[in-house]
Image (cartoon, rainbow, N blue to C red; front, side, top):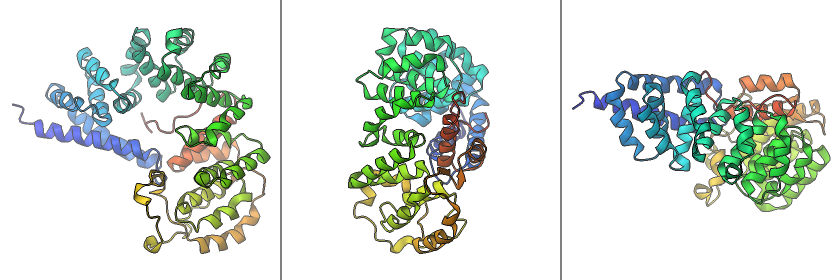
Length: 407
């Protein structure tokens, strides 16, 4: 019996828990790169503890792998790849590919590890006859923002690869992320697909490559609730002509079920013309916080730093079903705006903004202002900055703002 088993279990559980915490934090409005890096350092400490005696730690990994959960798969995969033990790696990969939840942890591990440990296996996955292995190789290249070059070209020429929905969609997405202009014809062909996943990512990548004619194909995704609505809004309203963007937002506002989509679109567009409307609708508790977030995206005004938040929002009349409304979960870490204070402030500061001009966090959009926010803002703002920067130039890849801060 291993007398240190309890200690290794603690290392394993803490590493897995911290990874789950980080996987949530990358999309939270109150985490920045520095805060993520602090979590990453804590994860590394736990992983190093497990590596002290891999053979003693591995049975704990095997037990956790039976649960097929993303956090346990992440930790087990890190230990397996760092051990250089083929059998351990094959086991971690096998379980990691067992379901959509588990594969999140496996892909994250492939992004976390140094290239010297990952690259030989990515090559093996590309050469495998198993299409799930090819998908894993593509996903690893995606999170690492590494160009698979001819591997990607060959896959896109194979009918069996194009019939594998997840694989084909990830390949189309990667074309945009890496700005593979040489594959634009592949995207034009994929647009004809009846599969929503494939259709969306082909149009998304076309826009990143500078083909704005794909915008009309995103219209349906923007006006319907679904898994791609937020992603469609996030890219389309950064490149739509101002007048058309305003018309689309009006259409969203006119549909009571799409008011949150309208608020998000307003923040993405960055037109200060809509700020007074955002302040007005902050009176509605169901959209107050997300409206304040869009206000900040346009104006760059930090509500907490400027004392524009309600210190005690407990007296706000909450929606009867707020606990059951999943859409409100994204508001959880956002502050409650003090509408009266905010209104008074905007009377004085609104004169500094030009209606009809796009702003990002208080500045007219430029590569310099966007890069600053990319390095210094909170996570949701960093995601937006990365997209703005990539859309500004046909060759700038889309930075992965969910990646490890200091690999």
